[in-house]
Amino acid sequence: MFDQLKNLALQKLQEKMSGNSLNAEATNEAASEGASALLDSLKGGDLSQITALFGGSSEGGAVNGIAENIQSKLSQILQNKGMSAEEAQTESSSTAQDLISGLKEKFQSNAEEDSAFDLNQISGLLGGNAGDLLNKAKNLFG
Image 1 (cartoon, rainbow, N blue to C red):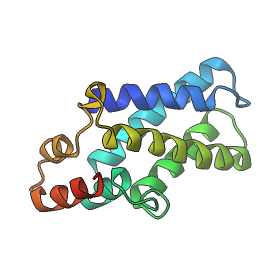
Image 2 (cartoon, rainbow, N blue to C red; image 1 turned 30 degrees about the horizontal axis):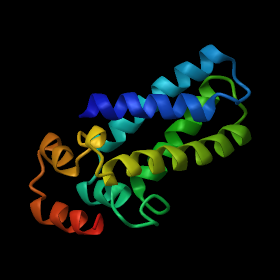
Image 3 (tube, rainbow, N blue to C red; image 1 turned 90 degrees about the horizontal axis):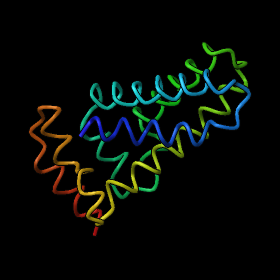
């Protein structure tokens, strides 16, 4: 599951960051590092924050510590690739929100091709006992 998340995140980051001021190679490197940073944030995150991030709450990403962490890491990655701090902050804010929205759509989708994006699998991979929390999150999906 994490491989699928990383691949989707990489694709979304490459699409979103394609028009930035960095060259294509630096942009691809930043997207790859950003996808890895997303996984690190999820693996180290609190399960309740993960379910809030990908659950039904429209504010799940706006005030979520994982979302803030991803945005901060993306900003630092872009700066390390040569982007100014101000531009990196603007780019990371927009990119992180779009990334989270895209992933959230996959977790909320009932389409067969999106069946791998399942909050229950994240719980199992993180080793959490979050059955009640995940059942509550499922209720948000309708």
